[in-house]
Image 1 (cartoon, rainbow, N blue to C red):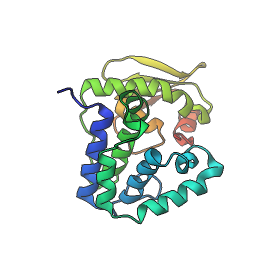
Image 2 (tube, rainbow, N blue to C red; image 1 turned 135 degrees about the vertical axis):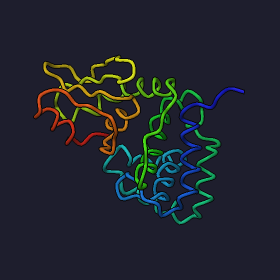
Image 3 (cartoon, rainbow, N blue to C red; image 1 turned 90 degrees about the vertical axis):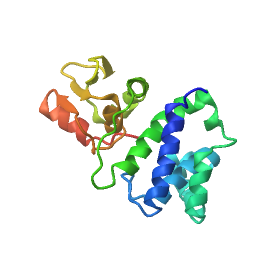
Length: 211
């Protein structure tokens, strides 16, 4: 039997943790609790029209209404529905790897890191490499609001990638998992180093990163 993808493993681990913590558990995703987070993921995968507001601001009201409808349901039922995606394009292997790897990693960490006493996980090197590939692609758009040149460097292998070209870039060094979490707008990271002009570092760290 083949090993489940990182996206599928993060999905299952998120579901296990959500059930263990309960629906009112805090997350680092806005003001959402665990139930809101699960509802968001279900709307994204099973309500394509309702999910449009995630990326199209003027449709945000539609997405909020779908979220409200979803959160009226029993939490355990919602979690088990999320655990087994069923008939949705997001369950197709290629689509799952492309669109769900970072989505589920980040949201799993949103739930983990909102709890007191959290510690970084030690991911398999192959999983770190999958997240590195995602950072190199998605990161180009995520750092754009900062308006400064940015390079990222793997703390484990030394590999580098340019996210935004220019002289005197900000260089962010660390494990790919921590770099991804930072690029998606989260500040609860560990082990990242920032090099470059102080004003540019500040602009990157204070920018509206993420989606």
